[in-house]
Image (cartoon, rainbow, N blue to C red; front, top):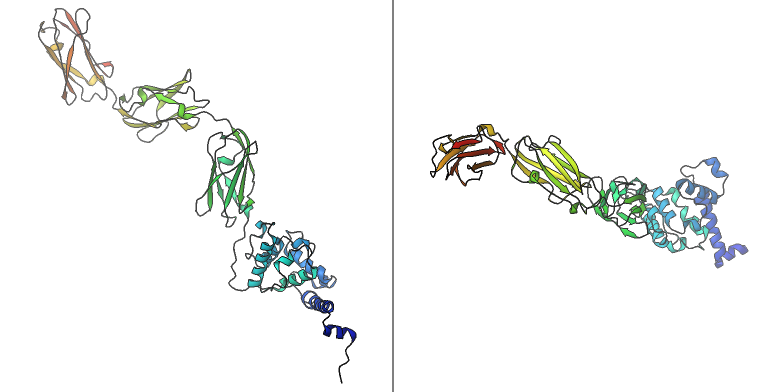
Length: 454
């Protein structure tokens, strides 16, 4: 005897698809959504809700940062799927919030594949279907109802979560003031707390022209990046700093660019105080700085003594007018001095200068002897000679002049005899008084000037 099927039972056997799907959906609602208790869910509260409300409430609790209110359009970008996967297994889709919303299928495929591989959630719906505006809500609910009881498998490739807002930038190049036209503006981006990602920087000038700044990864422990750009015009510039495609904290930065303070390359300096040799201790010297044609800028001079000390040398900087400045200083030590000259905080050409200062000049240690210096005893038309001893007198220039009876300067022969001893000769041709003047470092030695009668 054949079984007695009801009309509906016979329809199912005959393959009525609508009834079959309805039966399956009833089973899903009962066993997957209505019966199980999920984490963070109150039993009494769950009994008062429909299965749809219950699943939606669980998802909203897992994704408080996203406005999920349905099982259709709120899932079309694929990013909500990534957020749900990462909420169930932090680190599985850590960068979901930086996914490109214009590539929904790629986003959904990434999230669903990770869920399939490491949470054991089969893809009962395809990525193309779940992002379709006309998707059936029952299909989406069926897929999402697997998440509350999902467990992470061992060995999952968890990655640190990206948090671009924890990246920070610092340095003069992003300060509101202090940057100048045609001067390199530099700053640093630190990303150690933001996760793994690349830094991209754009600079927009007041006219709206946008250029990409130079970014160099330093590969250090704080994962910093060095950034620089050269503003071409004055005014407010917008500096946008992106990490993994998103703004870092405080980006974009507003930077006001001022006129250049001058061109240090057009400044020059010269004078005895900058000569490599010839200056002596305890004697003032000077040099001049010429800024004509260099624009606006502050002149600064820093002198470092042979021991490395700064601010130890007595110096004076005087504005002489006509874009000329005179620096007078008095070195007190022997050795090499370093003189740094800047204009608008930039070094001028040839700066720093290296100046070697000799021993202090002490003319009182010098002495001169010889027949040519005696008050009497020198005859006309005979060679008159004498020697000058300078050893121990420090640094200085030895200068000897002989003037005859008529005030005319006589010819003097000089010879270096070594060890600071110099020999001199002159030849008197007419009778009368001769005056011999001997100076060391511009100062008379003892008994100078000498006067002789011939």
